[in-house]
Image 1 (tube, rainbow, N blue to C red):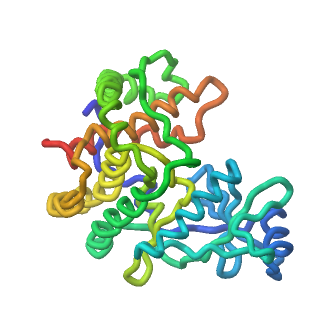
Image 2 (image 1 turned 45 degrees about the horizontal axis):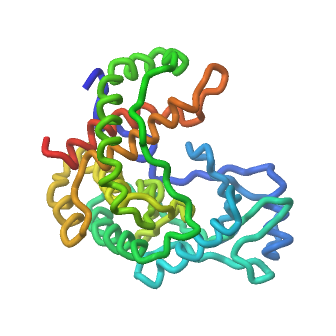
Length: 319
């Protein structure tokens, strides 16, 4: 395990979404001019999410969007349609012109119902619910047309350590150096399996982790509409299973019965390498994008991903 302490609580264990007052004038003007709201202050999500552009005002969340308008619109339409499959998502609120995406100063915005709940914590009630929700979600998305949606990049070459890993700091440098053999080996195995994974390309939710699920009064709400993309179902499903069940181990809950339920009746096989494929992508993206003076904002997730390479094999493999 190379000095990596497994099953440690990470940012995904935090269940409260904290908002602080924002001095950004744009969301206030959007709320006033496009949604007819009488407001002078607004709060912004202040969690770890470095790319979070969520603003809380009254009973809505305003999201500043990044991306292509047509792609965002298609993702939103699919996301909104999930309610017809019995999958809860926050309601999308049209602006005063009846549009679901607003444009203000060349920026795109969407307004959604504010769900006053907690992020998924891995309680027994939530685990029981997520077993059914995951199946429903992936089956509902599987029948969507992939045209016009972004494709998740895939691993097509093994990772080669060509970086000065000391730029990440002494602690991360040490665990990266000691784990480099495993990173290279797993990335090599992922490359060999990608052709097989590609046979299950589908519309999926690529980032179904605890902070993209809200729990309120016995209901789970799926968040993060722009994670609706095209990827191997095998990769996305196994990664989600790992992220949502890892809490079982740290809380002393036997995860095996839930594994059986989650995969029962699905045409997706249990495969730890599939989960590792997504983890390797995230880890190596951070390593590749960092350079002296330009360290990735996701640097602090390196230990989380390194643990995931080993933990996913415990949950989804035959260890």
